[in-house]
Length: 508
Image 1: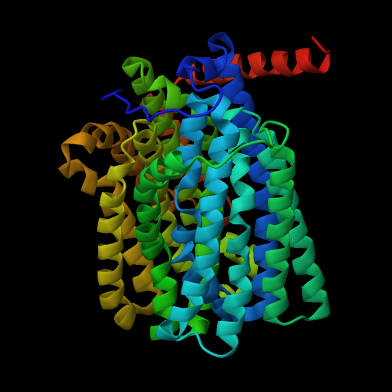
Image 2: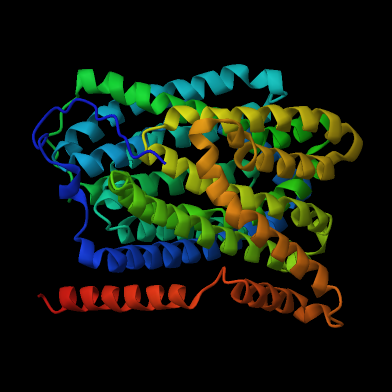
C-alpha cells in the first residue's frame, strides 16, 4: 500500500507547518480517538432516536402514498446534491489537517465556490423536473425542498470540528437539529398540516443547524480568511472526482425511488421508502466512526505499517458491526417495522430483509473511500460508483416491471456489493486494499448468514433476534474475529480519555 502523497503548493500564513504538527499527541492518540468516537456514536445515537421517531410519526401521519411523494421529492433532489456539495468537505479535512494555519483561507475559498454551485443546483433540478414526471404541486414542493441546498456553504466551516478532534460540537448540533425536526413533525401531525408544511419544517431545521455550525466554528477559524484564487482551482480539481463519485452514488442510491415513482405508484414507493428509512438509520454509524479516523489517516499515511494496521482494524470492526446489524434486522425486521410504522407498512418487512444486507457494502465502502482520500487517490472513486450506477439502473429496468419494490431492493443489494467489493479487484492500485477488506467481509458475512439460518430453530419468535446476535458474536469470538486485545484496547483508550476529560474539568 503506497504512502506517497502529492502535496499541493501552499499559500497564506502557516504554510510551512508540517503534517506532523497537526497530529494529536501520539501517546494520547488512542484516548482522543476513543473520546471522539464515543461522542460521535452517542451523538449519532441520540440523533437516531429523534430521526427514528420523526420517521415513525411521519409514516403514520402521511400514510403510504404521501410518504411515497415525500420520498420521491428528496430522492430526485439527491441526484443533484453532488453539484451543491462538490466533495469539498473531505478534501478540506485532509488539507487543513496538513496546513492548520491555512484553515481560514481554505474554508473561505470553499464557501465561495459552494455558494455559486449550490444556487445553480436548485435551478437545474427544477428545470429538469418535468422529465421525471414532477409537475404541478410536486414541482412546487421541489422548489421549496431545494432551498436546503442553498444552506450548504454555511455548513462547510464545520470541518474544523473534525480536524481539531472536537467532534462533540458537530454531534451536539446534529442532535439539536434532529430534536427540532422531531418536535416540528409531532406538531404538524397534531395540526394535520399538509405535506408542504413538512418540507418547510425540514428546511427550517436545516437552517438552524447551518447557523449553529457557522457560529461555533468561528472559535477555531479566523474571520480574516481570503479567497485563494490559485488554490481554488486546485481545490475544485481535487474535489471533482469526489463530486462525480457522489453523482454516480446518488444514481444507485436514489434512482430506484425515482423509477418506482414513475413506473409503479407512490403507494408502492411508500412501502419501499419505509424500508429504506430503517436501513439508512444504520448508515450514520460508519460515518460517525470514520469521521473520527479521517484526520488520523490523513497524516499517518506517510507511515505505511502504522497506516495499514489502522485500516486493518477499521475493516474488521466495520464488518463485525455491519453483519451484526444485518443479523438483527433480518430476524427482527418485522418487529422493527411494526413498532415504527404500524400494520399499514407490513409490506416493508420483506423489503427490509433484502435491503439491510447492502449495508455490508456501505460499511466496506466507508473505509475504502476514506483510505483513497487519505492517499490522495480520490480520482479512483468514480470507478466503483460508475459500476454501481450502471448495474443498478440496468437491474431496476428489468426487475421493477416484474417484481416492483422487491426487484428494486435486490437491484440495490447486487449493485452495492458489485461496486465496492468486486469492481476494485480489477485494478492494481485498489486490489490489495479490497482484498484486505474481503479478508474480513467474506468469513464474517458467512457467519452472519449462518446465524440467521440457525435462528429459525428457536421456538419463540420474540427472542430470535437476540439469540441470533448472541450466536453470531459467539462464533466471531471463537474464530478470533473478536479478540481479547480489542477489549483491552477499548478499555485502555476509555481510561485515557476519561483522564483527559477529568484533567480538563479540573483546569489542569
